[in-house]
Amino acid sequence: MNILVTGSAGFIGANLVLRLLESGLGQEHLHIVGLDSMNNYYEPTLKEYRLSTIDKKAAGHPKHSYTFVKGTIADKELIDKLFAEEKFDIVVNLAAQAGVRYSIENPDAYIESNVRGFYNILEACRHSLTPASSPEGKGSYQGVQHLVYASSSSVYGGNKKIPFSVEDRVDYPVSLYAATKKSNELFAHCYSKLYGIPTTGLRFFTVYGPAGRPDMAYFGFTNKLLAGKTIQIFNYGNCRRDFTYVDDIVEGIVRVMAKAPGTEVPYAIYNIGGGQPENLLDFVNILQEELVRAGVLPSDYDFEAHKELVPMQPGDVPTTYADASALERDFGFTPKITLREGLRKFAQWYKEFYQ
Image 1 (spheres, rainbow, N blue to C red):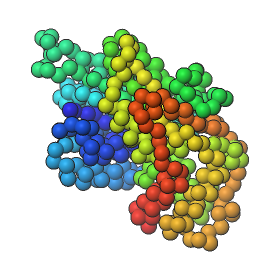
Image 2 (tube, rainbow, N blue to C red; image 1 turned 60 degrees about the vertical axis):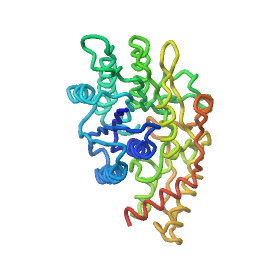
Image 3 (cartoon, one colour; image 1 turned 90 degrees about the vertical axis):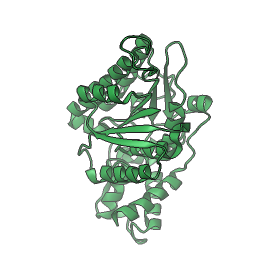
Image 4 (cartoon, rainbow, N blue to C red; image 1 turned 120 degrees about the vertical axis):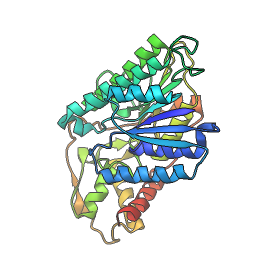
């Protein structure tokens, strides 16, 4: 089985590749192609660290193979070439320009990657479905059998009804990032309907963990506290987030990969979230306790002197809260790792990596 993972040097992508190399997705031989642009949206050393971890894992698994390709999904020629050469059975598209606030500052990056890039992936999947019996067919290869792609809890925008269900309307995004993710879901439905491409979108809820994204609150707060700077807690602390540890996200992806939608229109959407939203002030308290426990910060650190409660920022929402019952119903899985357990693992990694 041949699998493409885009965004493979990213936080979720790298963890997914590591998991696939370990489990093999139940296959005797798995060939994984990882694609990543290695852009400088955040410090490239983290992406290089993740790639080196993958290389070490791949070297120890002779039954499975891994190839890394540097490039962007916005490069249509590169995408078409990869699909023609590798004949992917499953595609997991995690490559995207992430971040709500950055979409206000640099909208072009979101259109380039999240819209044009995703379109290129869909087109490549479509053209891979040439019947093997036709003159254009190649042996017994039937084309991409499942496209799994990253959506986001951001698509729920300012919805008042909680928890957020995949049955809810998501017509009013409050950031360009959210709008591009909703467009991915619409594009995917169109291609599933017109061309029979099985697609599954996964709405991730505030993913965190070791070697994560520095622009996420838990990572950014840690950097600032260590530097003696003040952290800003938005909406005066009256925000709640449904934090999901990265291992739970990867478990959900792996289960979904193995089971493509079988309906008349082979299209599905799922939430992957912990289902237990945490108040930001409680989150900060747990984070600081675990940073002290790991030795990242001293036990006498004056946290109160380094906190500032500020108003809500543009594009943000007060609450994210996942109803993941559809995922549990169809795949028998619900995220289980608690916030304290996850932040403890992050703090331990941070101590080892930076200090």
